[in-house]
Amino acid sequence: QLLLVESVGGSVQAGGSLRLSCAVSGSANYNYFMAWFRQAPGKKEREGVAAIQTGGSSTYYTASVKGRFTIAQGNGNNLLYLQMDNLQPEDTAMYYCAGGASHWLPPLQLSNYNYWGQGTQVAVSS
Image 1 (tube, rainbow, N blue to C red):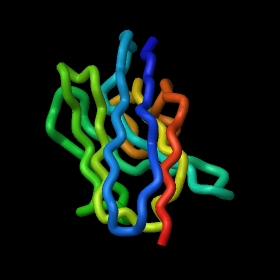
Image 2 (cartoon, one colour):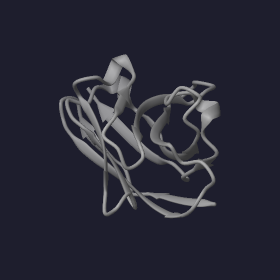
Image 3 (tube, helix red, strand yellow):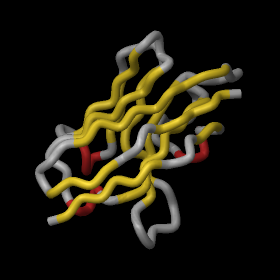
Image 4 (cartoon, rainbow, N blue to C red):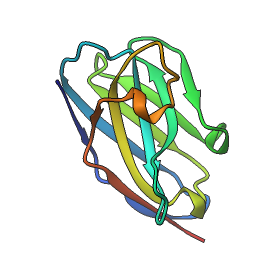
């Protein structure tokens, strides 16, 4: 199984930047995509923010973060990053690293992921 451990998030003012990282260890039968999800205060479900094909270059973003967030892998795919620029108050959420996805479901679909980190808080003030 995969073990995913996120770095500590943070608090910034609108327009600021943060970089999240996720340490990945172990193995899984399927790990075609890795992704970042977030759950905003008061929202029931986690939202797919960004995904990347494991070991590849294809990336996927939800519309609200395109051009502001960048997902990347490092250290031989043992690290997953989310660079967040021009942060806005609506980006405030608990952010989760996710892995263990198959290739036959959409990369930002919640149910495609079987392994999750513990979550890290990001707060953006106006």
